[in-house]
Amino acid sequence: MEQIGRFAPSPSGRMHLGNVFSAMLAWLSIRSCGGKLVLRIEDLDPDRCRREYADQLKRDLEWLGLTWDEEQTPQSLRSEAYHEMFSRLEEKRLVYPCYCSRVELHAASAPHASDGTPLYAGTCRNLTDAQRAAKTKTPCWRVAVPDEDVSFTDGLQGAYTQNLARGCGDFIIRRADGVYAYQLAVVTDDAQAGVTQVVRGSDLLSSTPRQIWLQRQLGFPEPSYYHVPLLVAPDGRRLSKREKDLDMGALRRRYTPEQLLGMLAHACGLLSHSESVRAGELAGEFSWQMVQKENIVITNP
Image 1 (cartoon, rainbow, N blue to C red):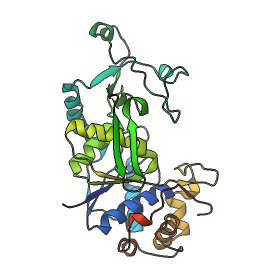
Image 2: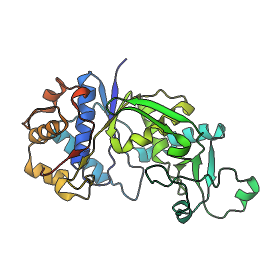
Image 3: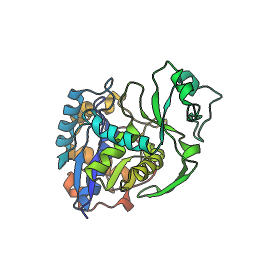
Image 4: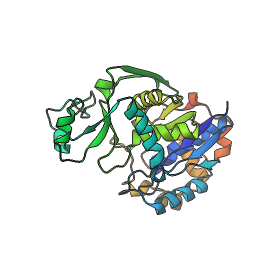
C-alpha cells in the first residue's frame, strides 16, 4: 500500500520557522518510505487567508527543496465536499443548530476542559422545534459527541486517550456565516486525498480524537499520526507568524536552504551537530526514533 503524506499550511502570513520544521519532518517521513506528498492550502478563513500568501508559501517550499507530488484543491473551493459530509452527519442525527453567544460560551460558569479551555455546555442540544423556531440569531452547527473515550497511538508522542464529552464537548462543524469548520474540512480532505500519514504540530494532538471519531462516523479510514514538538522561545512562548525575525523573509536573508535544514535537523535530534545538508540527504537516514518528543527551545536562530 502506497504511503501518502500531506503538508497543509494556512496562508495567513509568511511561513515561520515552526512551519518550516513541520514541513521538513512531513517531507522526510514520507520520502523515507518512498511515499507521495500532497500539498493542501488550508484557506477556510476568508478574513485571514490571501492568495499572495499561498503563492509565496509555495516559493518558499521550493527554495527549501521540500517539493510535493500533487496539490489538492484549496479548502476555499471545496464547500460542496464539506456539505456532503455535513449532510451525512445530519442524516445520522448527529448535528444541531447552536444559538449561544460568545459571551455565554466564555462565561466563567461554563464548563472547562482540564487544560482550562471552555467546553460547550450542550445548551442547544435538546431544544424543541418550537424553541428553535423562536430564535432570531443565525446559528452555527455543532456535532453531538458521546461520552466516550477515543484512544490512538501517536507515532512520536505515544499512547493518547481523550474522553470526547469531557475533553472537547460538542464542537462546531459549520460557522454561523456558512463556512465549514476545520475539524470537518480536514477529515474530509485527508480521506479524499487518500492520506495515510499525518505529520503536524503537537498543539493539534488534542484535536485528533474528535477527528478519529468523525472518520468513524463517516466511514473513512484512520491515518497514522505523528505530532511533532513545537518550537518555543526561551520564555516558553510558541513561535508564531508574529515573530517577524523568524519568518521566511528574514530566514532567507540569513541562511541558505541547506543551513536552515541542517539547523532544524540538529535541533530535533536528526543530526549530531548543525551542518549544511540537503533534504534528500536527510531522508536516507530518517527515523522517527531519532526525533525528540519535547518542545524545542530556539535561542538565537
